[in-house]
Length: 106
Image 1 (cartoon, one colour):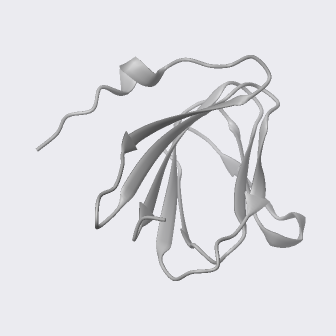
Image 2 (tube, helix red, strand yellow; image 1 turned 90 degrees about the horizontal axis):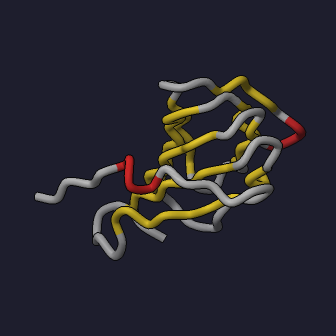
């Protein structure tokens, strides 16, 4: 077992996105914490492989982004689940912390 203290990853880079790898090289999944400063966009992208991902909003407000300029409001506690092949991204309105889970890991 492993305990991760998410409070240890509560830092931001002004005007940018900061990435903290919480679980690496697991044969089953990967968890990544991204912290986006207010106004920062994690661009819409997709991966050419099978699997699923989730994006969980820890703190802050913003939007989940998808194909064809799709936007869905995203608030603390919201969880987006998607195929890895499906275009996905996030735009922060306020400082925003998200937890991304990828299975299988890429």
